[in-house]
Image (cartoon, rainbow, N blue to C red; front, side):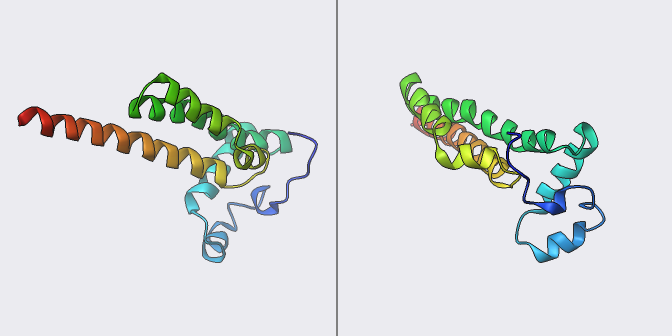
Length: 130
């Protein structure tokens, strides 16, 4: 994690005073800039600690995908979904970069998990009534 340089210079130091410029200039979510600002406030702005802001959401997405796969069919499906998530070159690459994509994948996998739960609860209620 510590061997590459960080390419996103907006996230070190001047992110908060240039917050609105970043929101208007980029198409990315303003939530990410607030997340990085909060991360810097809690843990500092060294390269290693900033990289962990992407590593942690990537690692957290693995059990979320396991539970989504388990809810769809069984534990084996959950293990397969977790393995595909853990071995994804996309997630491995962007877990090392200071980018939005690992947090975006975590939120997407949480939306998938809660949608599956909602649909299973909804269809169980429909089929029990009839």
